[in-house]
Structure formats: structure tokens, C-alpha cells
Amino acid sequence: MTMTGRAKLAGVMGWPVSHSLSPVLHGHWLDSLGIDGAYVPLPVAPENFAEALRALAKMGFRGVNVTVPHKEAALAAVDAADALARRIGAVNTVIVGDDGKLTGTNTDGFGFLENLKEGAPGWNPAAGPAVVLGAGGAARAVVVALIDAGVPDIRLTNRTRDRAERMARDLGGPVTVHDWDDRGAALADANLLVNTTTLGMTGKDPLVISLDALPGAALVNDIVYAPLETELLAAARARGNPVVYGLGMLLHQARPGFEAWFGTPPQVTPDLRAHILAHLGQG
Image (cartoon, rainbow, N blue to C red):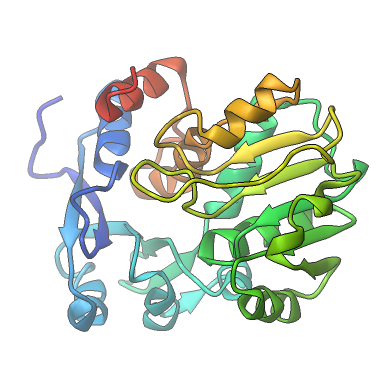
């Protein structure tokens, strides 16, 4: 629809931000819902981030998504961050209040769990251990979500063990750390395997892992969505494991912010998926 002078404004701040799918995603929702609004990319260098964030209210923005490298800086820059964002240690969604105050939250864990619910509705988080590959920001959001969902045993493994150890100490709960060299053995009796690393992403090194010890009923998820079916998911599917693709996490994590900024809850539809996949050249 045609924008007017009363259009609601939101966007995504990153450095760089040209790769972000968020404008495509939110733009589709705005068009399909007939909302007078705009969602724009906002390339902001790290040294200018706090100042740019503070300027949002003056420019009439309802809020922004925050992407790399600003997620940790956003936690310190907002007026208030909710308990979830503080546990994760990062903010990916900022809401500008009517009073101009900035509130930060993190929707990555929400997107992760909603994607699993949609892709594997029968999966029971309490049914057994989860193995999480990686210990970066995405892993942190995933592990917090798994703790809160009631997973009884979370096995964390990362190429740099110290980083995984720090995360386990930070988050507490049923999190144990396993050597990267033992990642295949950690799969014994697992109920879920999640890859949160960039290994297997287009242009990155492959993820090398033996699935021999993984039970046949265990769910396998890769948060990488380019390619849509990573080698990990293809190997899991070939041996009969249920799989959930990574694209859904990106789509679902965007829902809370869109509703907060534009006032309408959006839906993740086949139409939306087709639109995003076409943009990725995988449609």
C-alpha cells in the first residue's frame, strides 16, 4: 500500500546491514496486512550505535531490530531490558515507548521454540537430553529457551571449550560441557540435536559430525538457513530422524517486534516462506 505522512516506522540496525532479510520479511507483512508503515535498514557503525539508538524517538520510530555487532551493546544502551534479555546478555528487539523510553528484549529463543513447535509439534522437551553445538550468542538464546522449556539435560559442545564453560557457569541449570572431539559420543540417548554454529553455512567450513550414536527418533535442527537444507539436516533425514529447518526461527523471532511496533500480530504463512525463499534464490 502507499505510505502516508502518518506511517509507522521501524527498522533494523547493524554494521553492515545490507545482508539482512528483516526488511524483506517485515515489508511482506506490512503489504499483506495493509498497514501504513515502513521497515528500513539502518547501517550504524559501532561508535555511533548508542547515539543512533537514542535518536529513534526523535525521528518518530516505534522501534528497531538489532543485529550484529550491536546486540550486546544494545543491552547497555536501552533504558530498560527485560529479564530474558539480561539472562541472554543481548538485545535484538527495541521498543520505543510513548514517553520515548527504550525497552529491550530478546526474541531469538522465542523464535527457536516456535519453529520447533511448528516443525515438530509432537516433540516433548522433557523427554530427554539436548545437544547444542556452539557457544556464541545464538547458542546462549537457544540454551536459555531449552532450560525454560524443561529440558532435563543440556550438553554443550564448542570448538573453544573455555567459551562453553563460561556459558554453562553463567546460565546454570542442567548444562554440562563436552569436548568438541567428543561431540559424536555426546549424542547417545539425545532427544534433540541443535547446530547453532556457522559450520555448514554457504561459504563456511562444513560441519563434521558422526550421527551414529544419535537415536533414530531424536529431532535435529540447524539454525542455519542458507542453504535451507544443510548437510547436517540432509544426513539426519537420510537416516530417518525428524528434522526442522532453520528458516522458521528467523521468521518467528520477528513476530513479537512487528506486533509491538505496528499493532497487529503477524502470521508465519506458506506465502511468507515462499517470498523469503525466492529472495534467497531457493524458491
